[in-house]
Length: 212
View 1 (tube, one colour):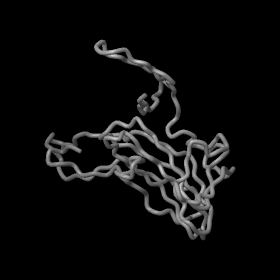
View 2 (view 1 turned 180 degrees about the horizontal axis):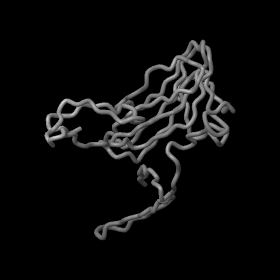
View 3 (view 1 turned 60 degrees about the vertical axis):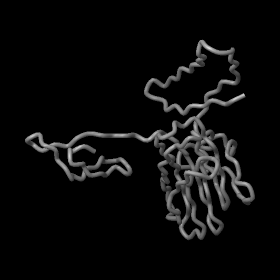
View 4 (view 1 turned 30 degrees about the vertical axis):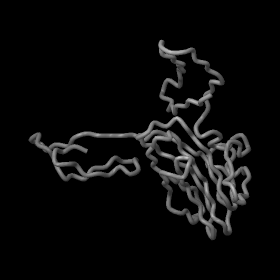
């Protein structure tokens, strides 16, 4: 048996049609256990458990579900250690954005971070260390899927004082925007710095043909 998976981002229709396709040639094919679930699963911890999040082997993660939440009623609280979850069905070569809201009180001696890899230790990316501040901070990583078609998401609290709270872990495909800037006479506007208000990592400079 082989598990097939695909990551789908819902649009305004709020609907998903699932197709099981078998080419005409070849032997018969069996399908079983078709399911649809959020990705990552239990991303807001609203089940009041840490179900679907696994502890890194060898770590001594101390975690529980708390009523201190960024949204909803619950969040994941962690005094130290790392929890992770795999998501499959990513398209190789496509860019994805992983984000989470994290809370770390002032005076904490152990930082918190979000980091990812492909499930076998390669293709790693991570955020800078969150060292406190008292409010909620959004941590974000851009991940380019490789041939594994998989991402392993880690929520890590380094040993030390303070409790980290995690909420609303989100995985979406990154938006790609392109266009062309011209001068009033229609010629290419090269070397112009542009940006999109409200977007992260959204500043760039136009090329010699005015494109970005």
